[in-house]
Amino acid sequence: MAKNAKFDRGDVIDKAINLYWEKGFHATSMRNLQEVVDMRPGSVYATFGSKEGLFKEALQRYMQLGIDNINNCRQLAGSPLQGLKKFVYQVVVEKRSSSPSGMCMLAKTISELTEENAELLAQAKQSLKTMEAEFEKVLCDAQTLGELDKNKDTKQLARHIQIQISGMRTYASIHDGNVPLEKMIEDMFTHYPF
Amino acid sequence: MAKNAKFDRGDVIDKAINLYWEKGFHATSMRNLQEVVDMRPGSVYATFGSKEGLFKEALQRYMQLGIDNINNCRQLAGSPLQGLKKFVYQVVVEKRSSSPSGMCMLAKTISELTEENAELLAQAKQSLKTMEAEFEKVLCDAQTLGELDKNKDTKQLARHIQIQISGMRTYASIHDGNVPLEKMIEDMFTHYPF
DNA sequence: ACTAGACCTGAACGATTGTTCAAGATATTA
DNA sequence: TAATATCTTGAACAATCGTTCAGGTCTAGT
Image (tube, rainbow over all chains, first blue to last red; front, side, top):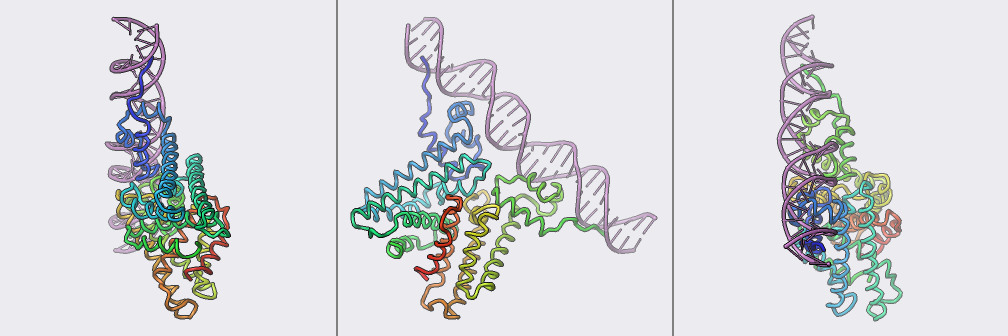
C-alpha cells in the first residue's frame, strides 16, 4: 500500500561516484549532487541520510567495482600474473583518460580527508587493504599454478603492486599521461621482485 | 613616510602551509587561516590577494623547502646516493608522524584540485617535476663520483624514486605507518634498478 | 473508488563561505 | 609637530553550504 522509489538506487550511486571521484568530498556540493542524480534534497536525505552517508555508499560500491575488475581481468587473461598485469594496465593507462580522475578514488579520499571525517577515512583505508588482499589471492593462485615461484612472499608482492599502482597513477597525473607507462608496467612484471 | 607591516611574511606563509597541507585547499577556510596567522581579512587580502594567491605562495615555499631538504640530506650523508636514501627516509618515515599530513603537499594538491583551479594545479605539477629534476642532479653526481654505474639512465632512476616515494607515502597512510618502511627503503636502494 | 502509507517537492533554515571597504591606527618624513 | 602614506581593523556583503520539513503526489491493497 505504498509507492515505489522512482529512481534506481544503483544508478544514483554510480552518478554520485563520478562526481565525488572527480571533485573530491569537500568540493562536491549536495546541490551539484542533486542535479546530477536528478533528485530533490528531501529524497536524497531520506535515502542516504547525509552527504557522508552517500559518500560512504559510493566508496563501498567503488571498491566492489575494483574487485570485480581484478577478477574480470584475471579471467580474461591467460594466467593470474597476466591478469594482474592487465588490471594494472587498465587502471593506470586505459581508464586514466576516461575516468573522472586519473587517481584512485580511495587513494584520493585518503589523501583528502582528515580525522574530521574519521569514518569515511577508515573505510577508504580498509577498502584499499581489501584490494591488496585481492592482489594476494591472485598471487597465491599464481604460485599454485606454478606461474610464480613458491618461495616468493605474496604479501610483499601484493604490497609492491599496490605501491606501484598508486605511485604510477600519481606520476601519470603529474605528467598528464605523457609517460612511457606501458614500458614501466612491463618492467614491473619482468624485473624484480617477480 | 609610512608604516611597516607588523607580521612576518615568511612566518605567515609557513603557518599557511601547515594548515593547507593538513586540510587541503578546499577544506581550509579563510577564517581558519586568519586565526592561525593572526591577521584580519583586510590584511590577508591586501597581502596575498585571494585564497588562491596565498595557496600559490605556500606551494612555492613548500617546494623550496623540499629542494633545500634534498641538498641538506646530500650534504650530511657521505655520498649522493646515501643522501637520496636519507631524504627518502626522512620524508617517508621520520616526518610522516610529525608533519601536518603523511602525504606530500604537492601530491595532495594534484590529487585534490581540478581544472577549476588550473593555475594551482599546473604549479603543483611543475613543482613536482622540479623536484624530480633535483633527484636527477644528485644521481648525475653519483655517476661522476663513480657511485652509480655510468650506463644507468638517470632520468629513469629519478622517475623511479619519485614513484616510490609517492607510492610508499600513500601506502604508509593506508596502514597508519605500521609497515616495514625502513626495509622497503633499504630494498629500494640495494635491489634493481640501482 | 477509496484510503493509507510511502515518496516527492521546493521553499526555507541558520551557518559558513570568500571577499570588500570605509574608518581608525601608526610610523615615517618634512 | 603636522602631514602623509601605509597598514590594520571588523562589520558587512552576497553567495553558497548541508540540511529540514510541511504539504502535495502517487500507488498499492481493500
